[in-house]
Length: 330
Image 1: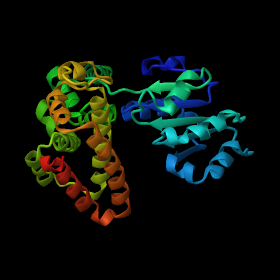
Image 2 (image 1 turned 45 degrees about the vertical axis):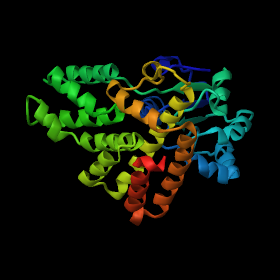
Image 3 (image 1 turned 90 degrees about the vertical axis):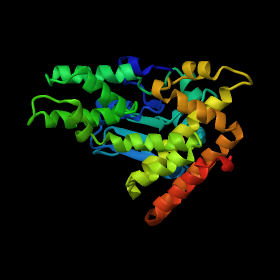
Image 4 (image 1 turned 60 degrees about the horizontal axis):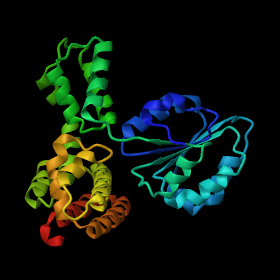
């Protein structure tokens, strides 16, 4: 059963299985916290999909086991994909009583077996979480500052929202920081926003990945040199890479010969931020569908590699990025 993210009040909590997919991680985190986590503070279990695939028996035992001290459970499965479909189908046939299971996934194509399973079954819930557009984030910021009676201009809010790069989680974190800042200063201006927020780093990650995918080697290397990325940043960068590569893959798969690229980008779902349209056009021109598919495979390999070699993760990742940004590599 499909429930849109703006219809979450329709969720019936007799439902036990939920699929939350899409790139809007901030919105997913917000809903899980508001609707679920407070009710399962002492009994929340988080799994990576790969853990379950390696040890299905342990996963089943946790779901089906009963405890005198635990009357209900919340089980969350991160990075869910079609690989887990058979396991979920088997669990659906079991009596899970007071256990609720939330599968969290990034972008899932229409042909995804996992997505189709949840969309077609009326007893389980499928919620797509698409990226927030500028207006939605602007409304969130305006509402928050108005309710808290924080004096801030619309120009300043616009800059804050633009710097959040469509990420609700980033925006909420920075809004909270601004609220604390106003305890010592009555009026917030543009300069305060630029100094106070650390969204420049997040912005540089998006700009880095976009430049690389656009095959702008010079700009990519400049960004790498200008930013003091840490070992911890490597995971953020590679995950951003994967999200954008998957979007490019979807765009390329929808591109037909002589098709109007502008029209494709404008009608693309989830919506593309208007400031990103030109660089995405460059990305579409510089990659074939086959090359993008290979890139996604390589990104997954690199993620595993940097996790296993954290001390050398920056060198591994930077070499990969520089290689991919070079036009001769394509």
